[in-house]
Image (cartoon, rainbow, N blue to C red):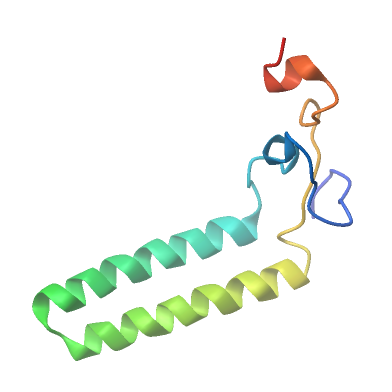
Length: 96
């Protein structure tokens, strides 16, 4: 688990992207990896006119969605704060 406190919901405001911790959580990385892999296999399936590769790509796409939901539910996709990740400290987000 993370050593940083969890936020109860996604942050809102002008600098909310900085407050998310830059998407460094296992659920995000897993979904993106499976999604890119699925897209690559789907592209190959179209180029080779392969139904088998198309089915594999579709299964991987569904698996990516399910994995993201499950990992988020068990706490691996939570929003966290680290030192300097808050919009309250203007220098931390590059605002003068």
